[in-house]
Structures are given as C-alpha cells and as structure tokens.
Image 1: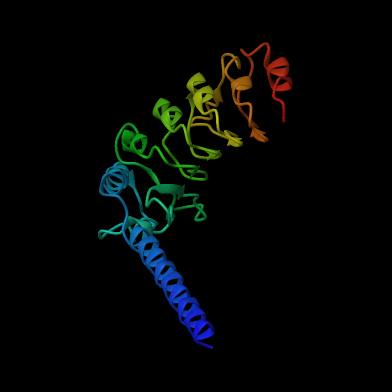
Image 2: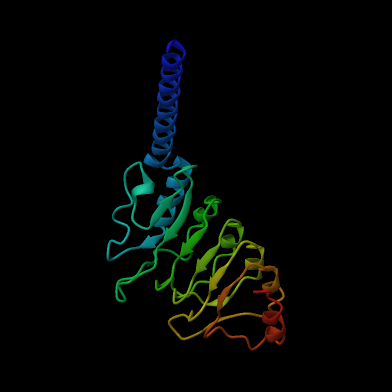
Amino acid sequence: MAKLALLIRGTALLLCLLVFQAASTSDGQASVSRACIGSERDALLSFKASLLDPAGHLSSWQGEDCCQWKGVRCSNRTGHLIKLNLRNIDMDRSLSLSAGEMSSSLATLQHLRYLDLSWNNFNGTSIPIYLSSLKSLRYLNLSRAGFSGRIPSQLGNLSKLQYLDLSWNYDYYGNKSYILDLAWLPRLSLLRHLDMSYVDLGSARDWFQRVNMLPN
C-alpha cells in the first residue's frame, strides 16, 4: 500500500511538472508574438513614408507592435515578419509613390516568405532590384501594380520561390514591363505558378525553351 501511495504521489508530481512546463512554453511563445522586432518595424515605417495612401490602407501602422498591423503577419516562434499582404481591393484609391522610387527598407525583411503588392499603382517605376535579396520568399505577387521597364534578372536569386506573378504591369502611357532574356528563370526550380501575362517578351527569343526547363 505504501509503495502504491508513493507511486501515485510521484505520478501526480510528474503531471504537475509537465503542466508547468507546457504553460511556460505557451507563455514564452505568446511573449514572442506580442511585439515585433524593432528593426523590422522601422523598415515598415520607412516603406510607408515613401507611399501615398489616400484610402488609409496603412492607418493601423502605428504603435510598437507591428505584428498587429493590417496586412502584417509575424512568426509566433521567432517574432520575425514573414508575410506582407498589401494587395489593394479599392480600385480608385490604391497605394502609390510619394517620391521617385519605392523605399528599399523592405530589403531588411530577410525572413519574409510572402509579399503581395498587387493592384496598386507604383507610378511606372521599375520593379526594385532589392526584392531579389529577399531569399526566404515563397510567394511574390506584383501583378497590376503599375510597374514598367525591365524586369530584373536578379529575381532568379529567389531560389525558394513557388509563386511568381508579374502580369499586367504598365505605366500611365501604356508602356509594358519587359524581359530581355529568361536565362534566370530555370534557377527558380521550386516554382509552381508563373504568370507573365502582358509582359513584353519580344526580345526574349528563348522564352519557350526556358519555361520548359522548369521542373514543376
């Protein structure tokens, strides 16, 4: 009987320790998700400062915790910003640039996996080359975002990319975005979705062969 009582007490103690450990782990995760990383918050604010936002899409972008801002998602495990969804659903009141080019501060977001800037109006500027430094990206949607000019071949550096949409980009005068060659495309070996509708491929003589080299 004494041995049984000792076994019961031991089991009860073990259960209490397990519950305490689980609660501590949960609290630790919650504390990570409550506030974003300061350098990433500053990057978002710098990006916001380079934009015109007539509809107030980014009005929630204030305060310390950028993980609670509209369109922003952080990892519960690390606290790093992993998703930025700025897709515009208000056709007449999109985000646009307040100066000549988009702030390069987004290059700070090295843990970003998902970036959607579609259906905005970036005033006919070229797609920023610095986007090719976001090596963690799995999803990149730049469709109908008012870009024009040459699509940078450096996008081939985004080796983890699974979704790429560059479609329907042109400036106020109707000048399309264009590609000179697609030698960089086969380097995106994980790519499963590719949309280049309305992209000028006139100078990319080997585009069909390059697309056929994609394994997926």
